Length: 289
Image (cartoon, rainbow, N blue to C red):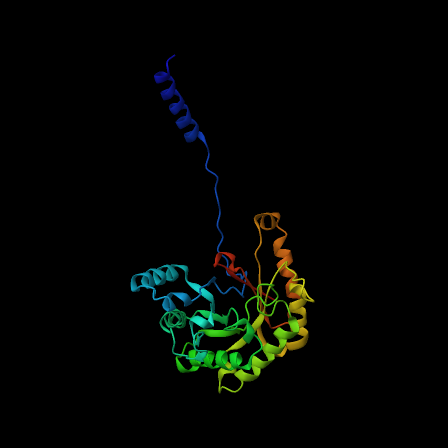
């Protein structure tokens, strides 16, 4: 039998077998039972393109509209928005503070979140210069800028404020120094109280540390940071948050949820713990008692 005759026979056999296969039935049940009352929706890390304006390459209107169309489809409930102050309110060339500097992109971002009732955790990756990590000038500028965004410009979407990104890391300006971070948190809290109504609208978030990581220069691992924060400054923290960068093996093993869940035991009842996975700039999960 030649190949031209074999191929039709194979195709007919496949077709007959397919027709003879019974379809598996799937039953879907819609219930009024609440599975999770704390779900806040999709979330992303959406930073406001700090460098773009400073480099003279602002986001085009067409790109903004493309972003908004995609975000409309995502229907987000939560955004983490972190800035680099040298591209915003602090001019490194002059050392001067200007809260109106490079406002366009962050205003477009925050206006979208305000208009769509999206909760924003806003913050700063690091101080304007690493030498300013304990400088009161930074505290004064950062809080004044926060108040400008919230109270003067009306971006009510900002609900939480992060003062350092991953302070436990050896890549952070505080380099894992918990006491230094705590001292700065207290100073930021005190400064925020000087602005009428600001602390009613915005709470501090922290400690913003990295799960499954321990800086040799730090007294604590991530769980220790959370526990110490609860013990020392729980009255100043409105939201607890941690970062996670799991690999495939950790996720597929099925053990990672238990590791993340173990952090909940340190968080007081009535307070929330957010897990942020910035590695792919998507995905914010809330864990709650």
